[in-house]
Amino acid sequence: MTDRTTDFSVEANSTSFVPLGQRHGRVRDLFTLWFTTNIAPLPIVTGATLYRSVHLPFWVVMVTIATGHMAGGLVLGACSAQGPQTGLPQMVQARAQFGRYGSLLLILVSFLLYLGFFTSNTALAGAALHGLFGGISPGQGSILAGLCAVGIGVMGYNTIHLINRLGFWFMATALAAGFVSVMMSGEVPVITPLAEAPLQASGFISWMLLFSTTCVWNISYSCYTSDYSRYLPPSVGFKGPFLASAAGAGCGASLSFIFGVLIAAMMPGVIDPLSAIAGIEQPLGLILMGLFVLNIVSHNALNVYGSVLTLITAIQTVFISWIPGRVARLCFSVIILAGSLSLVTLYPQSVVPVFLDIVLSLLIVLVPWVTINLCVFYFPRVLREEGSMATQEVGFDRKICLAFLVGTVVQIPFISNAFYTGPMGAYLHGINLGWLIATPVTAGVLFMLHGRRRSGSS
Image (cartoon, rainbow, N blue to C red):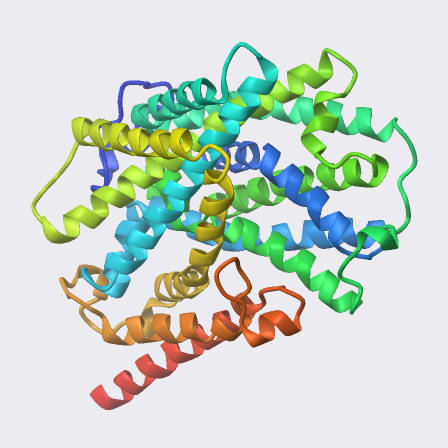
């Protein structure tokens, strides 16, 4: 195997299988990728918001955040470990599970998730650049940030890993400096002030809000996790990619959330955590904000890279013989950028909240898919008969599609988003626990249906 980790030509592959002769890379790069990706403004703001929304002891908040992110990281790691063994992007693998046409809905939903995150981050990066450099308008900042993200995404796999390897040292150092600076500003309160804690109905409800949000955070990356491990040789096995990805995502997200919690706890008068970071003694505050902007761009490269692969996968569902390369990825990247910038320009104030509402509402399909994905991959002898589904060209796998549908529908009473709140969602003060119900229900239906098939065939 030749080491091509420093080969920074434009990636030639798109959604096709990565031949064994082209496999390269190091398992530890998965740690730096998922760690660096999670050191960003959004998790910091989310951590601060969560702290202000609950009435729990400070140490309970910290432990729960770490526990939730580590639990979600285990799911992300399990999906990441699939990449070296299959050599395929995550959504291409869905075809083997759901069938060529059965996977189409999931692929399109994944594309919308990518597009939503890419558009929102482009707008946020534009606003951040405007805050750093007053001469740059938010629109101009969005164009600059979008072009940089697309450039990285077009270059592809090796460039994305290189930037995150280098970014790891900068972001880890900057975050450590930020922790020290904030902790020197005062004393940490033992418990969240009552006046700032609307969820006082139950300590358990508050705890579940924390745990659910943090656990689902890393699970939401699962629809493109193996995209960034599929060039590793299968000889790396499962353990290395699993542990590196899980640890990177769990540690990175936990530290960012806890940093936001620390700002909210020690600077209760500050509404926006990012303004608190910008207000840190200079030049540290300016350096931190500059690094966060760069990290938004780097993270957005993953969104545009994944959205292009997903869009190509959807098109290949209809045009089976089409094998796209560099030019196709470039063209689709430009189209996605143009569409996103148009929305950011036309609706500068509303594009971020609207897209985030749409993205959050679409997450209802994610947990049933993750459950099916992991069950089918890690329990193939139980869920597959002779003639594995991975090698069959079927339109729909009716049993898997049915399990997916049941796992999605069972969440409806628990939904709580901008478009609909179910009865259980309202009862639980807006906390969506549907994902906890969907996991065992989806797995149970999946094993039950395939168990019946095996009994019938015998």
